[in-house]
Image 1: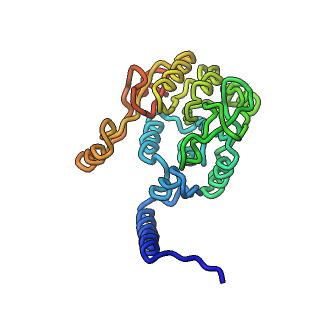
Image 2 (image 1 turned 30 degrees about the horizontal axis):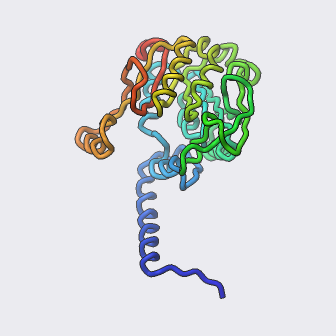
Length: 291
């Protein structure tokens, strides 16, 4: 008869881990709001964060929601470029009149659509294409082990070949009310793992027409500088870094500062792309004068 076997030590360690997780996660989630409801890949970095916190980057999202409320953007459109499984799109669905998202990776896009159903969100539209400088079918690769949503077109490598469409033209064909300016874009989030400059080049006309606030990652200074150059060509002139208490120190120092001082998140104006990794906000003029 077939059977499996674990040593007493292996069983004890794994069982203790199972019981600890089953005890901690439900107790943590009791303190979280019931929405959004998100299906995740449980071994994925994003999924692990959502299981523990209910939503990914919840503190930065809370800060941005307050900023957008202060600026009166509730009737405007949010473009989510690199929508992943829908974390940000669904989190901001109650902040904007409409959300238009782009996610070309088929299994991740499927999770996105599932999460729209789970969360009961009806004002989000998903386009299963990537945006770029020109129309093309490009190789797509996963860049980070343990993060299924970290794929990108930037490396030019990969087994998947997925559609990329020139941004301004695609919006004119598929979102004509946005392209014409009848519906105004108030905020854009772009998280495409190094492909930002190509995305921004293809949306230059849209950015100049709508003058939105735009959030993007700079994981490597060279990539960040290329992206910022494209944004300046579209008329953006102000750059801010999303800061958090203790983010200028090591992880132990960061956590110690937060234990002692509490936690804060804010947008700090900067003159150029920083050397370290940073989530950035680009705007047409200072953020305090937007709207």
